[in-house]
Length: 283
Image 1 (cartoon, rainbow, N blue to C red):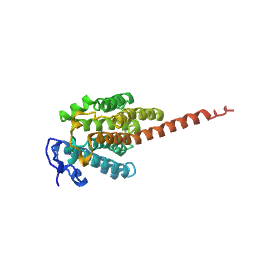
Image 2: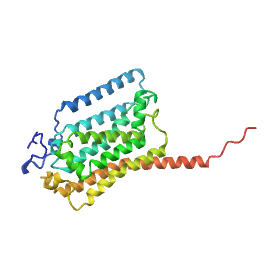
Image 3: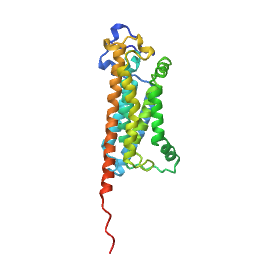
Image 4: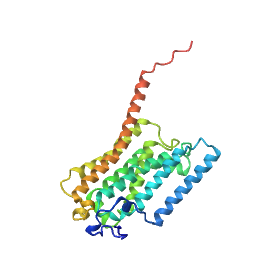
């Protein structure tokens, strides 16, 4: 059985509602997606090779591996046949979005070179210092999660087909902003407080937990396109919605766990600073 390559998601007959993993992961080719990913990958690995030749220990190999994994996951999520099944599985769709928001960003951010310095006075430094401000990143993340998951916003995105392109891009952008604040890859333009990053991590996880809980405990299907949809693997639309809630909740747990670790580290720092004795006066 092969999945249809129709541009209209959801045009499946009942005999095609049990795709295998190989069929879901079969790749498509959209030059508008592939070319930017290949360009970013080429830029990164050329810079990595040059750095390794000049200064072998400055740019560790593990960073390049993580960055490459992030690009591979992005290709699979955005260019596999699973993107044609948006209307047949809300859970599959939400799994794709969570990979873009909660797996790809930390891989990419951790893959950035630690020795990279960006001047705060440069145009790029000024722009990124504003974009990576915790309050700006938090506001954008709240807007993405809340607006696009209320019924009106989600229904509109599916009906106008922005669910296939715009929404994954927004989740990826929002995830990159959130994880950049949490992991602080650009220390020359980002704050140093471990406590601030911990509180930010906890706050950024709240909208996902709220949406996930709503999906889990709602007695009815919240989104019109899924009310009478033929769902994959013999699931009902309500089961799909509940599974989507579990997917979003579990996807948000690693970020919140890291935030708790950062807060604990901050509290330990405060306790240590409060118990330190002042140096004796000079004789």
